[in-house]
Image (cartoon, rainbow, N blue to C red):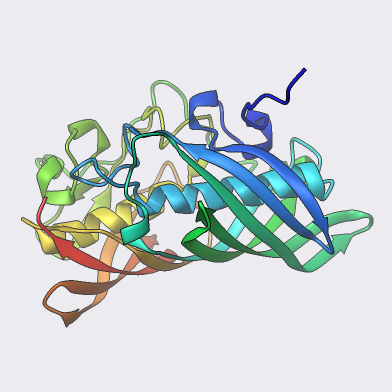
Length: 303
C-alpha cells in the first residue's frame, strides 16, 4: 500500500480537535535534529489575515507550539499526561511568503533540540529551534524553552485552581461592552478577547472561555496562545482603524494566567519604526504581577 498522509495523534500536540492539528509526520535526523511535515488549510476561522489572503503569523506560533509538544512526547520520551510550561517563544515570519495559494499549504519544518535537562531518565527541560519552509522558501523561524511536569507535581502545584467548565465566564468590567471586532483586527464578535477601560492603553482580557479554537480543551489557566491573541488585539486597537500584523514577536511567560482573576493587558511601550511599521510591548498582569510580556513588531495596513 502507498504511504498515505494523516495528522499526527492529537494527543501529542495537546489538541482535542483533529481539525486543529497542523502536523502530519516526523523523521529523526540524528543528534536531536528532526524534520517535520504539516499542512495549513486555505481557510481557517481564526488564523488568517484580515483580508483572508494570507496565513496568520500566530498560526505559525501555534505550529511551533505543537511541534515542541510533539517532539517531547513522540521523540524524547515524555509520557502522555505530563504537562508543559512554555517559558518563552520568539518567532520571526516573512509575511510575503505566507500568501495562501490555490492549494492547502504543505510545509516542512527543521527542528533542533538543545540544552536538554533530565530528571532521572526523563526529559524535564529543553530548548528548541525551528525553521519552517514551503517549497524550499523560508516562511518563519523560531526558538523556545519548554519544561515538562509530571502529573503528580502538577496536581500539587495547581491543587487550588478551578478548571474551566461549560458555565465558566471571564471577568468583565461593569457597564463596559467588549471591543468591537474591527477595533481589534477581527471580523467576528466571538473572536474578540479584550474589554476596554477608561485608559486607552489598558484592557481586560475577556476571551470567550468556550471558544472552539482558543479553548480547544479543558484547562485550569489561560493558554499561552490566548495571551498572544490578547497582545495582538491590543496592538491592533492602537493601530485602528488600520490593523497591525505581528510579523515577529518575543514573548516571555512568567507564571500561569489564572481563570478566576482579572488579567489586565497593558501597553508598556510603543514605537513607530516608520510610518508603516509598529513595535509594541504588551504586558499582562494579574494581582499587580506580570504573567507575560510580548514585544511585537509588524506592518500597519488597511484591511
